[in-house]
Image 1 (cartoon, one colour):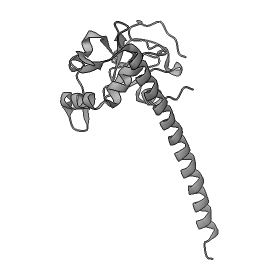
Image 2 (cartoon, helix red, strand yellow):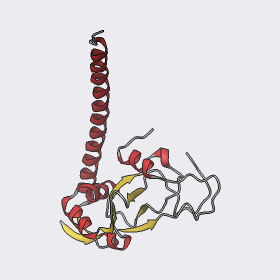
Image 3 (cartoon, one colour):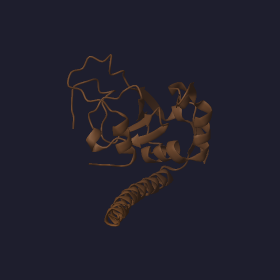
Image 4 (cartoon, one colour):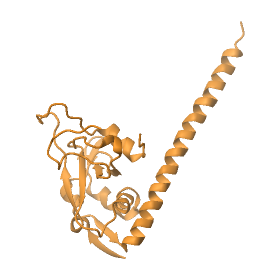
Length: 187
């Protein structure tokens, strides 16, 4: 395994300010869209804006507020990238996008590097785009990257399924307990 700077493998495309954009009938990518992509909800809007800001299914985006990466789903294809997000453009085939998402979200060394880069005040800290270029990432064979990326996304999918199961269980048990209380009231 060798370490390389992220700037050697990707280019960052910052989003635009939707309040200053003069685009009619455009749909912007927002935090809810990111969360859906992050948790793999794969449930289109197409317009004719500059392609660099338009998201396509399979693009990788980073939420600056959450310091997390996700892969754009089919439901968010065609949306316009806003200031709170950065699109990652892979410059070559030496870095697998699924492996990148794993590294950016979960790899401990990258998490530590991101923590050192955080800037801001109050409740919102962001990583400056210039600092992202300086992330040192481990480069292994592309075959191994693909295996790690696939395992990570399977884990995310299972996590999503478990969360849905947990929510259903809580609703079911909660409703039974509510009915027990209502049925047990003394008059």
